[in-house]
Image (cartoon, rainbow, N blue to C red):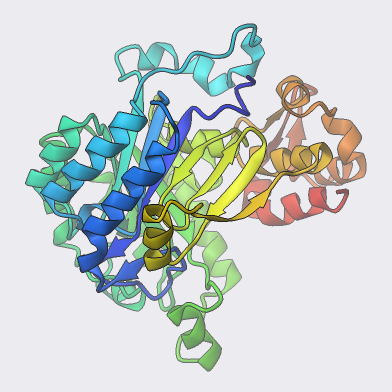
Length: 407
């Protein structure tokens, strides 16, 4: 089975939060902690549909707030997850050509010789992670914690409707690092009322903790969220595009100067610390997904689970399918999707790997769009691969939209 059709990574969704932030449109639930134990039973039931343990090279438990669970509940969750999805290095299928391994994997192989054979990540909020919980996570092999810092500025945290305060952040990092070595920070720029000076301070504050990985996301106003409704009523005003662009460009400059590799539009990593889990998504390769609202891409078919937690529990425990949507793209559409996701990476689109993965020549799919992007310095092209330029990273969504016009 081809590497991009057989999953070697898995995502598990934990929807529970102490509070539903105003900008969030994920499948989360707040104020329903009485459902947690039933949910853990439902997750274990869905995992059992695998039929047998499936070793994976990366696991990612996201949310929601997975560390909102108690230490005992985390123990129960991780027992089920590692039973059915044991972390371990996955072998490439027999006969897989060496050029299918990404340049990053080849270049950083030496840097990772002493690293674990698998990556096991969990998301945490600064006010929900404790040393007791970190010890439980480490006991099951979790070796990477992604902390939702978002900002060190009290005003930005307030407008984002976050419940933690800056003082929670050092305590969370200290608790994690007593047991787990690798810490990643999520940061949001462009909150209403924020300034470039505040963003400069956020990046400096983040770097003071020496994280191995930093994700920087421009705030989006997702339709239906409380923040979107406030914007629609005019009670909050979105930051201007020029201000957001200045913040993004500062992130590229500041993190680059600090030794971080800008390996994907929103993601920066110290050498050897790219998020291997997310790299599978950006390569448009297969992945498992379990839990409410989770997506999976297995053997060329995409499925999406129901987004209502109570409905998910009822279906899973009742022996019913928990997916409500299934799609299998035609080969040409899948090739365009692969083009769109891979362009987000610093490695870009490798022509040989793209042809082997999709069956299509890259230049035959969207020749006019590629030429337009090259002529306008949106992409660089050395004949082997196509990559976004610095200018292209600033207009990545528009570049992808241009390519998809040829679909």
